Image 1 (cartoon, each protein chain N blue to C red):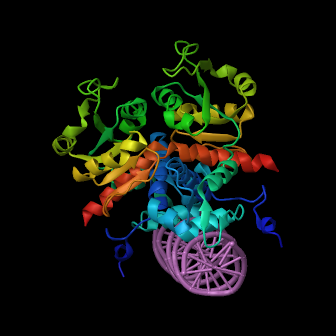
Image 2 (cartoon, each protein chain N blue to C red):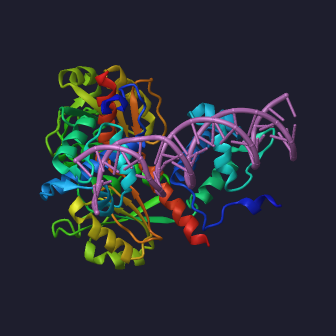
Image 3 (cartoon, rainbow over the protein chains, first blue to last red):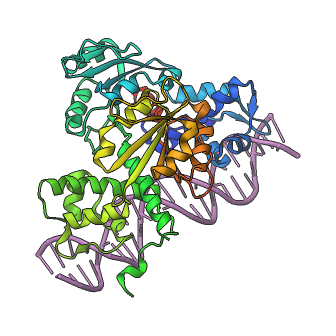
Length: 220
Length: 220
DNA sequence: TTTTGTGAACTAGTTCACAGCT
DNA sequence: AGCTGTGAACTAGTTCACAAAA
């Protein structure tokens, strides 16, 4: 059997956990690469960034054989592979719906651009906002223009930063514009059709989890 | 054996997943309560909010017997229990370190106040920001004042919204001020001592996970 | 020798299915 | 009858430990 025969096909469901870890591995490798480290073993990587060596190897092995036994992994090579696996070797254009405090902050968040994401458009319904730009220069369109702007700018990811009451409607609009990946900052659960990937980044849930651990830890 | 005998003690480790789900259940119950629904069964709750009935029952059963067989759960009563379990029946004061775009947006995010969190202080190092306030009125202090302000305002949760290069230093300062729960928005992994709960809300990882699913789904 | 890649073992998390209570 | 609470069964995820490769 050739090594590639057991690589995952496009129809396999790879877990969210693995996807997140690949992103973390990429960041570690980028840091190493920028300081000129040429090779690293899974155990050195694990030790340096508080990860688990076996898990790194297993995660990578889903996608191919990138290492050399007895040596480890080539940092720039593995970094390139990970960028490809994560789809970061193509242009990724992002739209943010909701030009409130959070939407505007996300639009100008420098971390996104650094990693190769282009925030190309903001959307809102308020007449006072439509036609303006974020401080960083991202134009604010009317939500009515969403489909047109998404098509014209080849936008592949939509971010929802509107109040909960509007979120499902916005999600529907985003989906019907052809976008198949949504990052949702609004509280509450949204429904999207199969084939659309929804990722929740619910800030209130995060804070309440912390509150939960404080309440548990302090009571004893 | 009394029912309470199997309740979890403070030293038990309850998973992050359960904590997040409790927060979601609370939001569902708050929505039901505000529309005057008096009782709900686990299966009705599951159906309405796309959850799993057995999981709801099992999650709740860790903390007590809140339901009535043949009837279901009292909405206001279960809501009150959940608020207690999540520690939301006490005052929770929050500090945000980093008064950039993201920090300022989080400080004025209405969702936090709605759920009972008080964002009482922002911190930064820039002379031009210290002494100012967010649009919503949260005062910006010098990071040097952190320990003093944390103690005086009984702050129990710290939010990190600074660039990656400063994040570990900020985390250390937060920990040494006595805070035991941190929500980290900066990329990269931070180390905190045992007994301090760190929750990462890494925006780049979220976007890259979505990119990964797009790359997988579109290649076939 | 060193370190990968990976089956096997283990651990955590979820769902089933039903006894037992109302 | 209806629904909870929960052991048992199942599924997913992690870690171990070692054969195979360089």
